[in-house]
Image (cartoon, rainbow, N blue to C red; front, side, top):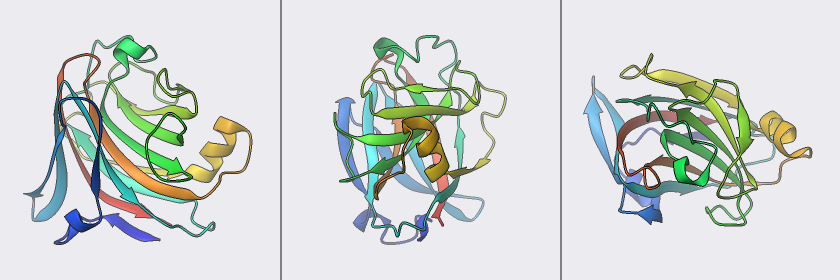
Amino acid sequence: MGVLGGFEPGWRDVWELQQLGGAETFYRVVEEAGDRVLRADADASATAFLRRVELPRVATRISWRWKVAASLSGNTEERQRAGDDYAARLFVIFGEGELSADTRALCYVWAGAGAVGSSYRSPVVDSVMTMVLQSGDELAGAWVEQSRDFAADYRRAFGREPGRVGAIALLVDTDDTGRRATAWYDDIIVR
């Protein structure tokens, strides 16, 4: 438990890239207002930035802050394979800790058109539940703090108790729509 994403020196030693489609999403640490934050730039790309973890079962909450330059506004096909792109995503991955066809995960997103509070199965991997936390451009350019009880979200999504969390992954992906997106992440904390 603790800070997973403060992005201090040595951050590259604990985070890894996982190519998912299209070109590579570019991740780097930048300084903003005296703070080191992760910046992700996608251009028709989908590369996850993943951190494997071994969390005790008492860890049930995750918090973070994120911002986007702009949402993928106008993407009305987010629930379809052809539009399964988001300006920012954060995954809580259960089990082995990688994104695959067998992944069971919660995917928190900053949508372009989806209704805040809505949730639905991923059109790509049926065992991934997508949950819309932010949508549109009203808050684009501003840091937004998020906090979720991922154990409760898992029970609502899958109707059973969650297994062990194997990884946390960040993703800015635009491979299906062929668009560009930029997002920033910081202060990823599991309690």
